[in-house]
Length: 314
Image 1 (cartoon, rainbow, N blue to C red):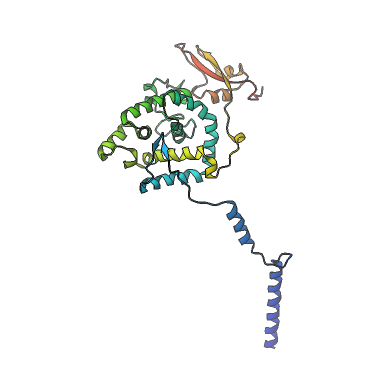
Image 2 (cartoon, one colour):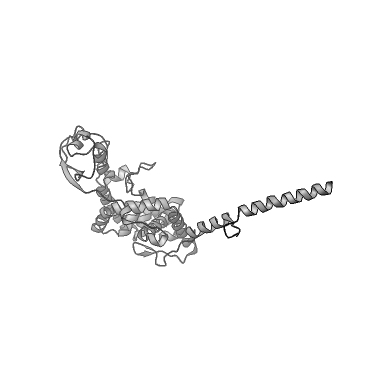
């Protein structure tokens, strides 16, 4: 009886096993490992690999000593971080298409190398941010620095948010730093650490260039991050980005309106030009309040988008 029971259990097990095998066969009776196929497809579509570093990597024409093993590791870190943070890199490319045409001619007019537009990207991501220390705008200018260089900074008007005017200030600051330190790489580093900080580090460590300095985390990564952003934004396809031109952000054409008297209410002012307050502020972020005091009758230039670009509900 025990023998017969064992035979029946064996036959039952064989039946279950054959049923399972049949369930996982395709029409040609070949066994499919579905997980393996899925893994193979994913691997073919997406690969994570090291990033090629250009042999002629430079900032403002000043070569980076990538034959230095410590330098190449720092360069590699920023290339990897900025290449594989894809969402951020895509946003930078989209914004660059919108704002670089404004920044580039101002840099050129002031004799500042074109590479410094990537410093603005590293500073703010081309956004009107405010840092915990109070640095403001695309160029992250401190209140005292802005006033020192002639910007109006108060509760009513803050020209650190004015892209053209703040770019002019950044140019003057960078030109002064270049005269102080003798090269553009140190001028860029001093934008982050301050000229007195860089001067102190150079003197204490008895070196004369950025790549030989031992610096804190932020300034130590600063120029390398600018270099990585410059290369990736300039050559997106080389780093795996497929960006269609129509997907890039575009500037809305505007015309200028001069105001030399107080404005009681910018919401009403906006309606005169068939836009709303939000659109007005988008194009004039330096206007910080819903009104303009202007007791001195100073002449301000306000940018108004061309008619038809915004559909405003009545």
